[in-house]
Every structure is written in C-alpha cells, then in structure tokens.
Image 1 (cartoon, rainbow, N blue to C red):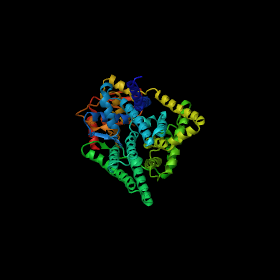
Image 2 (image 1 turned 180 degrees about the horizontal axis):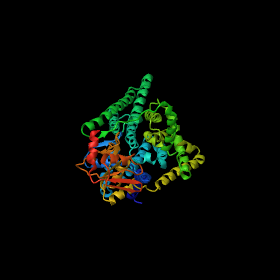
Image 3 (image 1 turned 30 degrees about the horizontal axis):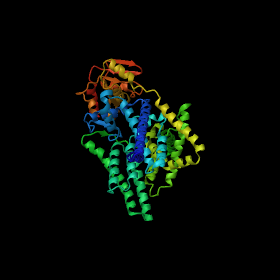
Image 4 (image 1 turned 90 degrees about the vertical axis):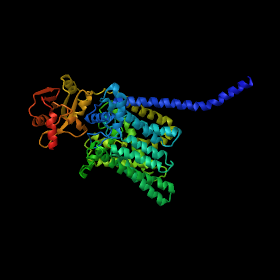
Length: 549
C-alpha cells in the first residue's frame, strides 16, 4: 500500500469514533420520536372512549372564539377555573391548525388531552433524570415513564379528557425543571424571575397551584433556608432558595390580581367558588376516598376495576403505586440535604395535595381525584429520582431473580396501555338530539346545561343550544357557566325551542318553560328527549327574566 493510501485509511479510522456518537444520538432521537408518537396515539384512542361533556365543549367554543380574535373572551362566563392560560390557548392552537379540515368538534378535547398527557410523561421523566448521566439517568427516566405509562380505564375522565387540573401540571413541571437544572444560572435572579412568571401565568388559569405548587415551594424553601442559616451554609445557597419562596409568593399575588384586571378590561367573568373544608366528622370518609383516588391515579384502583383482565392490570399497577409511596418515605428523610431541594418540594407538594383533598368537600367519589391529579406526575418523578439508581443496581446484583419479575410488570403495563387504546370510541354526547334537531330544521334553542354546549359542539356549528337554569320562582334564566352572553341576545339570535328532557335533564324544565314562555305550540318526544317549540323568539322573554333578577 502506498503512503497516501495508508494516510487515507488512518484518516478514515480516526473519523469513525467521532461519527459513531452522532449516529447513535440520531438513532436515539428517532426512537424517542417514534415512542412519543405511539404514546400520543394510544392516549388519543383512550380519550376517545369517553364522550366530551358540556364542560369540555364550552372550552372548545371559548378557544374557537379566541381563534377569531376574542383574546380576552369578552362576554364569556367561565367556571371557577378558567384554564385561560393553559388548555384554552392549547385548544385554540389545535383548532387554528386543524379545524379547516376537521371542523370544530369534540375531537379538539381528545387531541388536547393526548398531547397534555404525553407531555406530562416526558417532563416527569426529565425531572426524574435530573443531572444524572448514562444508565443511571436512563433508569430514572424509564421508571418514571413506566409508572405513568398506562392510565386506568376508569381514570380516563380524570387524566385524559376535558380540562380539569391535569394540564396545569405541565407548566409546573417546567418550573421544577428550571429550578433543578439551573441552580447556578447567571444572573442570579434569572431562575427566580422565570419561576415567578411561569407560576403567575399558570395561576391565572388555575388557582389550585396555591396548594399543589406555591405553598410547597415557599414552605420548603423557607424551612431549608432557616436550617441552612443554623448550619452556617454558603451564602449563595442561603440566598437562592428564599428567592424562590419570594417568587412563589409574588406569583400568588400577581396571579390573583390578573383575572380581575382582565375582567376590568372587559374580559371574561369568573365564578368564585373555590375549595371548602368539609366538617371534621367527614374526614375519615375523605381519607378513604383519597386512598382510592390515589390508586386510581396510578392505575391501581382494584376497588373500581371490572373483574377479569382489568382487575389483573390494576393488580400489576400496584407495583407503581407502592414505589411512589416508598420514594415518598425516602424523600422525607432527605428534606435538608443541600442537593435535594426539588426532592423536598415534590414530597411536600404530594403530602399537602393529599391532605388538602382529604379534608375538602370534593371527596364525594373517586372522580374527585381530579383535584389532586398533580400527585401523579409528581409522584412518578419522585419515584424515578429516588429509586431509579437503586433499581439499576439491584438488577445488576441479582439479574436472574429480578429480570423475570420486571418483565412481567412491564408486560402488564404495556398490555394495559394497549387494552385502554383498544376501547371503542364513544359517540358524541346527545348525538340523537343533534340528528333530530338538524333533521327537523331547528337551529337555535335552549336547554339545561348538560344538553347545551355538548349539543352545539356535536352538531359542528349546525345547531346552537344555550344553557338555562331555574330561578327561585321556577322560571328559566341564562345559566352563566361556560356560556357566551351574546348567545342570549335576541337581536343576534332566534331561539324557538326548549329541550326539557334527556339523559341529564334540567329538573322541572318543562314546567319552568311553560311558566316562562307560556304553553308551547308543539311538543315532540323521542329517545327520552322532550323538545318544546314556540312560534316566537324565546330570548326576548328570557332576557327580561334575567334583567328582572
């Protein structure tokens, strides 16, 4: 071989090590992207197995109004949680990109829910990984993602449907990641300022972060700072954590004022209900519901699973719930370790959220677990962070004993994911009513809340049904919850029917409609529905009733 030939061969050999890592990273990126796509598809399918109610339908309509320029949601009455800076902009983005081809329908909620849960899995895995590298970091991330991988079928309305605090966890995890990854960022105020901005933005949408984030962050930061001062720790360390507490408190104030400012500028009206504390005598019941809700979030609620394959899946999921509890115990023993700040915050957030839910008035049934849904990503991240390294070491020490058991658990989780994704899609809520109204040429009318927004959205803008409720005198008046006040304007709309029956009818709607509008000219009954029709614009009388109130 010539000298030049040997030089070319040597150059090629020298180039190989530098190109191999790049190819490996590219291959890993492709695998991650493929995994994300598979997860999104499975979660989308699972979400589609439950119909979207009037709550989610109202959010769809608000987002569509936002797409058309109503950024402040003028004339809208929202619920006690606006989701104004979380899911509503997300829905608006989805609608802006896809509504031209798909129209505006319940699919928006399903796509948004699948997107949100996929993000939660990824962000929780990143938080669990922390600054660990190599196999240790991978073990942490995989353990976290595995715990969250397959939501229980019965938990679909909680974690994979309409906005109900699940999406609130996304920006919170981003804030935790900033705090954990960049404690030495320069300038020093950068991370506290970013955290304050994120928490303020999120609280405008959902005040529940006072319990799930702001209180735990401030409490842990102050307690640890005080302990650090007693130990005489480094001045920089003593400064950083109190600055985060100050950022959290400031965010609480700004997040409280911002919705009022939006309202003063002509934006949406918001109900002020909030969470109330139950009488102490109901706390034991609340504790039991809290336990079942905790299991539900982690796919392990054996009390609600159907006998057979679902019960088997929930039994397998008990492993994940047990790991979260074990990680919580370990985390509590590390509250004052200098390098474990985010661990202490996660542990405090979980305990405060569980305790607040237990003594609240939301513990009627397991569906109330939506009020503590952040426990799921926080708990999974904590388990990955505390136990990922230990699990990897145990597998290396006793592979023959642990690998088969791990394979069984992983297979159970993957099978549960596939089983949930294979559930048949649910038809839209009030689809028979939509078909009847469209078929008979009715376009605008009134109904109880649960037959209102859901019917409008299911009709793909062919029918407008506005929600009403009963006054103390038994008359009908606009129901100002997830509704647009302009829809009751008789100069803009002509409503000539009232839906007085259905799966979830307004109580005494038929009698109240006659008391408000007089005897109807026609009454139709079909599929359990009652549709009363008048030859006049009912909104004129409805508006006078509202003005009188």
